[in-house]
Amino acid sequence: MSENINYEIKKIGDVTIFKLNEKKFDSSIAGFVKGELTILLHTEEVKKLIFDLSEIDYCDSSGLSAILLAFRILQSNEGHIRLASPTKNVKTLIEISQLNRVLPICNTVNEAVKDLESV
Image (cartoon, rainbow, N blue to C red; front, side):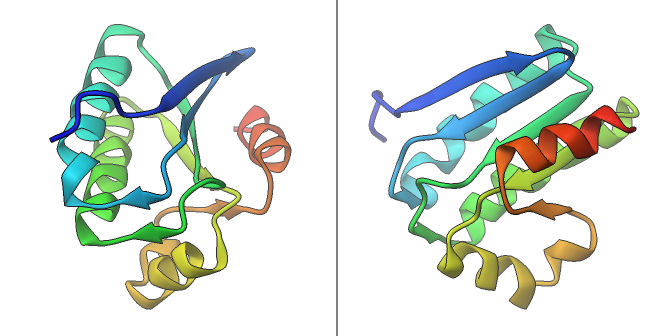
């Protein structure tokens, strides 16, 4: 597993944005991302999370599993998640796996921020 995963965390009001700056979100980095999200969601008491997918060209089931972990942690703390700016490939995977039924998808980060501000 590579130790230098490129990601950034930003806050806009009470909304936290997690942006993964990687082209591939697969088993090689999913474990690391799960760890980072778990720490972030438990130590920062995040209730509103946007997962910015704009840089990811390829995602597999282990990548989706990391996103679902964040969703479950947030759900248990009465929090909310939005997926923002997925590339065509990633959006198709989310729709095929029917995760868009539980994971709301927004076209842009700004749209996701506005959506979360209303909950």
